[in-house]
Image 1 (cartoon, one colour):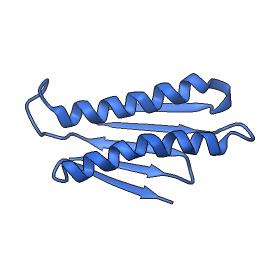
Image 2 (cartoon, rainbow, N blue to C red):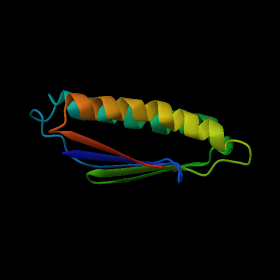
Image 3 (cartoon, helix red, strand yellow):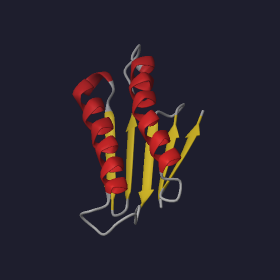
Image 4 (tube, rainbow, N blue to C red):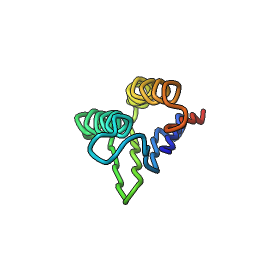
Length: 104
């Protein structure tokens, strides 16, 4: 199971685990999670000095966090809120393979 946690206050997204929905290379759930994570990281990095993103990858885990510049916190949160909707949808559609927890 993939566990996704969104720290809304800390502006961080933590992912760990594996979906095991299908064999490697055929796992649509893993692919969907990967696309959402890559999109979040790329969108934050596109903002560069405005959001100061940090991406830390370990085997089976990923942490994406940002420390926005003054006046950019709301924009960073809005971006992460939008990406988070995708994780919530995956958790609803594939509850045996993805869990999504949001911390206010």
